[in-house]
Structures are given as structure tokens and as C-alpha cells.
Length: 392
Ligand code: LMR
Image 1 (cartoon, rainbow, N blue to C red):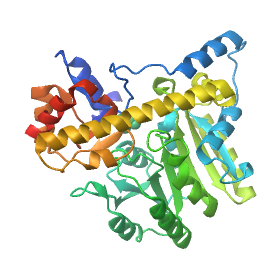
Image 2: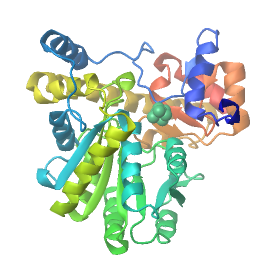
Image 3: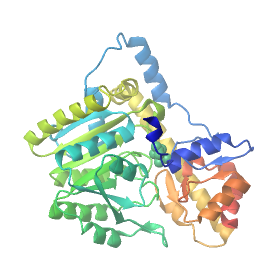
Image 4: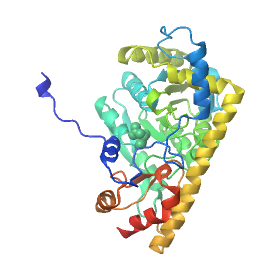
């Protein structure tokens, strides 16, 4: 049986982790996978996470099952973190999921249960796991234009022109903030136009929300999603705690569904519980309970908010430093967009040959589509790295 298997295509982001690890050169630079790094190039356990984990170990008296939907206090706290008070709590249901990827998977399965014929639209480009999961689940995928490679900014007219081809009931994946891989984001006006479109066309917005707090701040990053949530009848949201809580390997995420129809919400809750049961029974508890402890304790929460802000400001200052180093290295404003982009990534627009040369000759690792993880730039070597990028 097993010999019938065919080789699976590698994920171009995850592939970079192995390549970078295997490189023995000193001073190598990892701009690949989306993992936050501090000034020492480390990905530390966040302060509030350490404290909450100590508290959890001390107080936990059982490892028995929790429930198919996971820790419901965690789900409620995440709902509030994402949506604030934009919509009444009783209009939202949700399930804990293993990471942002798990949440996306569970919600796409929900789409498949509810409307197997729906097309799922995603931006071109997007995080490669979006089309991969859509295909894996046997759903129909379609792309909409998003990024203008010449200006490195959102091409909103092209986006709306493509989305105009969607049919009622189709699903549209939007990045809540900090677009991955481009770093180019929608303005408040564009979110409002998109909301008009969602209402007019009766499509279902599906928000991938993996970087809240890494763009303009925890609330500012949610502003577009919240404004849309107020007006639309239904919305799906996959939120991740991998990045903003630094809980990557603990797999902490939440699948949220908003509906203004109470009966639909009861059905959704039952379907989410059933899908969890079918896929893994119970979502992993540890990381979600750590998040619950942090978000419900004023002191830990304040410290977590402060640390997310430190991370955000560090990435912002790296953006500014890099843009200015690239201005000098290229003697042009070609890369000025790096300072305007927000979140963990920017797409540089350099060629595959340049990307390979950076890896082979300079030990600088960039994803094949020219996405860079801004947090990976060594702050004391920005000029050197900028010169290598410009030399291509
Ligand atoms: C990324 O885009 O680098 C991260 O979201 C990690 C991943 O799972 O791809």
C-alpha cells in the first residue's frame, strides 16, 4: 500500500528551516519562517507566558479531558481580543483549534460541510498553506489580484475587479492585518468598500488573523475586521496565538464564527465540536490555558500587551533602518515601501536568481517568492545585508 504514495510537494517556507539549520557558516541570516526574533536573534518565551506557565504547573490538578470545543474561557477571551465590543458576544461561537493552521483547517471543513460547491477566493499571493489546505479538502479555489509588483502596494482596483467574479455564497479569505507574504495592507476605506461588496454579493468573509499586534497595535490591527463584523450577517475568523503569544510549538488558535441568526449559530457550534472530534477529538490544552490565564489576569495581561508592543516597535525600527540602508545601497527609493509595510513580512521583489545568490554567497535566507521576515534582520548589520541585497 505505502508504495502507492507519491512524493508531496515541499512547503517552501518550512523547507527553509531545514536549509538554514544545516548551514554551518558563521553570521548566517534567517529571513525565512515567520518567527519573531529579538536583538540577539533569539525567539524567547514571552515574560507573561513564563509566569502563566509556572502558575499553571503549580495549580493544575488534572490532565483529564476538557471538552470538544476546548477551553471555553479561552475561546471567549480570544473572541474579545479579536472583535472587542464590535458585536454582541451571543452572535459569536467558536472552538479552540491547534494553532492558526488548525483553525483555518477546521473552518474550511465547516465551509465544506455547509456549502461544498462554494469557491474559496484567496489573494495572489497568499500564505502557501491557504491553497494547499483548500486543495487537500477538495474545495474549489480561486485567486484574486492583490499586490502590484511594480509599486509593492495593494492593487485594490484589480482586487475588486477579480472579486467581482465571485458568486453568492462564495468564501473570500482576507488577511486581518499584516498581509503574508507581502506586508501591504488594506486601508480603513478599503475595508469599508470590501464590506459593501460582501453585503452586495452575499459572499462570506473568512479572516486569517495570525499577526494581531504586529502591525499598528492590538486594537488598530483589528479595526478593519471589527468594522466589517458590525455590518455583515456572517463571518469566519481563524486567529492564531503562535506569533503574538510566541506559542508556536504549543499550537494555540481559535476558530470563530459570527452569525446574526441564532439558529445558525447553534448548528455551527455543533458542527465545530463534531469536526474537532473527527479530526483530533480534543484540542491541545496547555497553550490555550496559558493564554486564558494571561488574558484574564490584569497584571499578566498588561505585561503581555507591553511585550507585544516592544516586539512591534522593534520590527518597525528594523523596517526604517532597512529602508534607509537600502536607499543608500541602491542610491534609489526602490525599497522605500519596506518602511510603509506593516507586520512581520515584506516582499522585496528580487529575482529567484538573486535569492539563490544571497543564500549561496552571503548565507542570507529569503523565501523563494522574495518574502523576508523583518524580525530576522540583524540590527547591527543592516548596511551589510542591504548591500548584499542591492548587489544582486
Ligand atoms: C510563516 O508564514 O512563515 C508562518 O506562518 C509559519 C508557517 O507555518 O508557514
